[in-house]
Image (tube, rainbow, N blue to C red):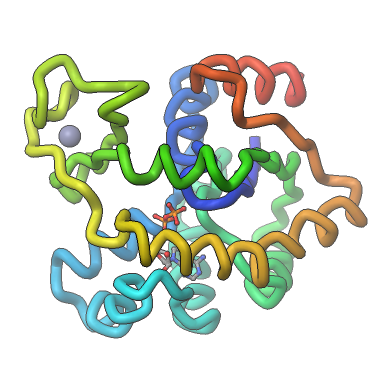
Length: 216
Ligand code: ADP
Ligand code: ZN
């Protein structure tokens, strides 16, 4: 399974990815997670990416493509992957196409998770993320709370609100999504790769069931 999950911030890409992985072994590649890991570790890439992330803007395409070229060439990605948060621009999608050609990989499909903006804002502001860079599990204080308040079920790490999960940054991220990422829906539709799903179906497991149905 070589899958791209497409959707606005807060659409549930990360949550759906983690659920799919329980049954389909594949590399979960989240560019947001990789970037946050780099910021936490203070790498050169992290230093360059941080200012864009803090503002809710996009990290420049070339940095992302270089990072992903390396990541997709790693052994685990050859058996299958779920891309979460990449590609985010037409330039990135074209770059990904070249990388996959070189690796002789054909995309299984692109799942576009559709959620209206009002719901997204509410979800993101109540989202909490595990502060352990190796875990980064996602919770929601309203819809998917951890067993113990403020503590990650999986690793015991402290749950935090991501620096970019605030009102103003979210508005920027949604505007950037509309302008730069939403055109990818058309791009993959024209390639006959797109599956659209409604991401408002209450529980994330309902969305997950639909993804599985689409993939057969
Ligand atoms: P969300 O989907 O909730 O916006 P992510 O964790 O996917 O969050 O991304 C967080 C931030 O990391 C983005 O706002 C952006 O600054 C940066 N980022 C992640 N993936 C990409 C990408 N493919 N291209 C450019 N910037 C990216
Ligand atoms: Zn954790």
